[in-house]
Length: 101
Image 1 (spheres, rainbow, N blue to C red):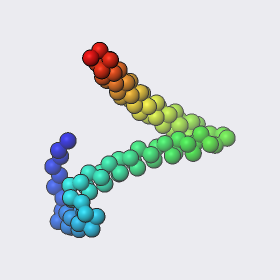
Image 2 (image 1 turned 60 degrees about the vertical axis):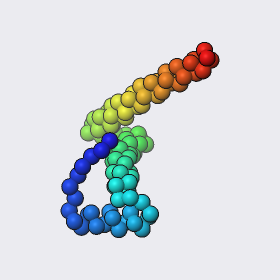
Image 3 (image 1 turned 120 degrees about the vertical axis):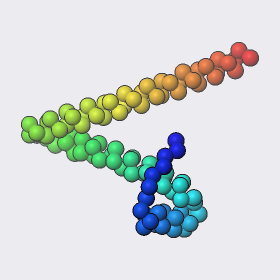
């Protein structure tokens, strides 16, 4: 995906300098940093969910929070399940095509 974003000159200079230091293109470094930020963002709710699961007693607010976090985790895993099933179907078709040839 191509995405154009406007950065202030200080941020742009930082990205260019850091990319040069790593021997990368600034665009590649930016994509890497965005991906890392998204994965870290996704892990925060799971860390809190694990914290709540580890408690012996939950308050009503904590129980509601855990239910909400669990629902989010379930939705994410369901999406991953569908992606994996699609990948399996694709591999089955490829295997079938190879066997049929």
